[in-house]
Amino acid sequence: MSRITSIFPTVLVGLLSFPVDAVAELTDLHLPVIPRTTAEAERITAATQPATDFTKPEQFESNPAGAATVRISDTRNAFSQPSGNISFEKELDFKVGNGLFKKLWVSSPSSTLASDGLGPLFNARSCQRCHLKDGRGHPPADPEDNATSMLMRLSIPGGASPEEIGDYIATQSDPTYGAQIQDFSVAGIQAEAKLQITYTEEAIALSGGEAASLRHPTYELTDLGHGSLHPDVMLSPRVAPQMIGLGLLDAIPAADILAFADPDDVDGDGISGRAQIVMSNEYGVPMLGRFGLKAGKPSVWEQSAGAFSGDIGISTTLHPAGFGDCTEAQTKCRAAPNGNTAEHDDAEIGDVGLELVSFYSSNLGVPARRDIDDPQVLRGKQMFYDTGCISCHTPKHVTHRLDGQPEQSFQLIWPYTDLLLHDMGPGLADNRPEARASGQEWRTPPLWGIGLTETVSGHTFFLHDGRARNLLEAVLWHGGEAETHKQSVVDMPPPDRAALIHFLESL
Picture 1: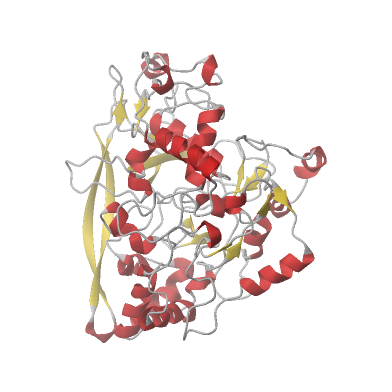
Picture 2 (picture 1 turned 30 degrees about the horizontal axis):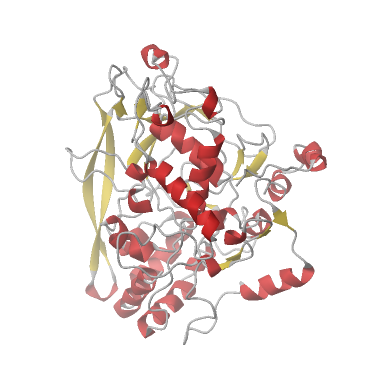
């Protein structure tokens, strides 16, 4: 197993002078891509056409991850199986990566050098502590509960904008508390703060005499350990998302994603999906953002490295500072011992370990669909299409053909996302920009596996901060570009609305 980093120099020479969309089109740099033939492109166009017949399932619909689909499970391990087409040899890499994903890190100095380097500030001691059973995190249940699977991102206006990326909104870390709040710390270091959430309820009248209630969260950071936040600080609460299918999302060609973008709403459908473009820490060039709630990372590798640094305080070759997110104002934190060693590439987890975790994260299998021929599910699928939900939640994609990476190679997949940024209106806004994403924009989340959330995670809290307590509430929070679609759900006959939710539960 090795990290593939071959890049054609002739591509790099011209990359930075290209328009943003052209740059993104050329930057599937981290993947061993075999170009598609004309015949393959024609097959893909036919295979990814939206459904028009809702009397029966589509061909291959039962396998949302293609050959990588895994068996249906009614246990909490439903999201923890390796890709269905993984080889015996690579399954060993998957299991070792799983061990690193679950590893509890300890503070430095320690006799266990392979596990040493936690913090000094952190949100959790392992990846698994946030992504419980590889599923979705949750907000604190009450004021006494901790926020282990939820964090608060921070930034203030200003800073540098990459010249190569248009429409970039410059922000920088809070000068005292950094890029996010860490509510835990090692011995001798003060934790940064505690997250407190209160809710108010809003009644929503639905057609047919039905009703729902939405809870509006208010966030407060208490017990600030290092003085005041910057007066212009912008906060963004984030619940850990589910982990399945990440390698397949990584393998969707950037050009295919860009083909769905319509930033000026030229077709007049009210949907203005925009591509997130970010500077790659690995390659130093603009790349299409795919991962994170605002698509702030371009690959599973970079997403994993960022989480190690920000969430656990574990350094990597991409984020080599042993003190993690400690700022210059946190002098004691910066002076604390760290676990950077030559044996781990002058970091706390070296490239081999990071590759194993990335491989594990890329190969968490997507479970097979359930009840796809159920009449109510088929009716709900028609409601999903007729309401226009597929304008953002694009049902089907075909991944790149990849050399030496068969698990993700040339698969027809059904993630129900366009991976683009959409304005979701003021109700869901965090008012914190990230790269090209405004304070009201979010990346369309994949929907595959969403119906298994309660089975895996033990709850049904949805959206970026877990405010929605069920799928209907999640739909009713949609605004902005999705306002008319949300209103259609409010107005539709109750049996059709129930069928729509039943369809989502089947994914």
